[in-house]
Amino acid sequence: MAENAKYEAASFAAGCFWGVEEAFRKLDGVISTMVGYMGGHTENPTYGDVCSGSTGHAETVQVTYDPNKISYEKLLDTFWNKHDPTTKNRQGPDVGSQYRSIIFYYNDVQKDLAIESKNKLEASDKYNNPIITEIIPAPKFYPAEDYHQHYIKKGGSCGF
Image (cartoon, rainbow, N blue to C red; front, side, top):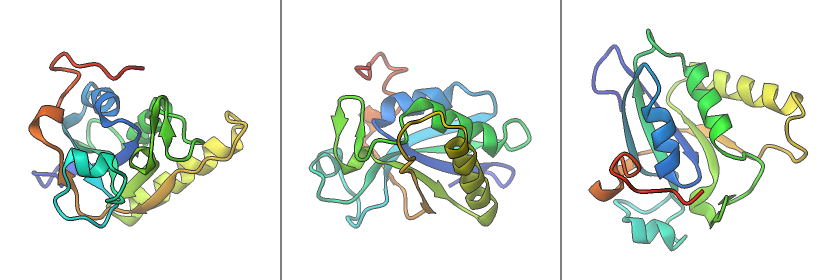
């Protein structure tokens, strides 16, 4: 969660966390990003555990941001534009429940804004298929292994 009282946390699952983290990391007003796992039933999962599909976790990016510099709505816009929210358990070449689309909210304001943004996107007819993104309360966040943190900044690639 946010390490400073003036900062807030937001968490999003939108496929492979490497590219999603990079998109959020570059935004002015984002203080820090961390990749990890949320939404499952296994405590302290590893990347191998999550990739097996047996933990119920989704690859997630936790964002710490300054709401005086960037709005939660801007974070939602980045989330929606970084992936296809109509594909169940798949983003690009990545397939499995760990790649599902989820907005994890930390309070009622985030919940309401997430629902509102999803409804606006559905009404826009941008997609031919229904948006299947889950909007659920944020459970415990488990940080991924160090080599996953800022992976693209370190020179790695996402493959698409």
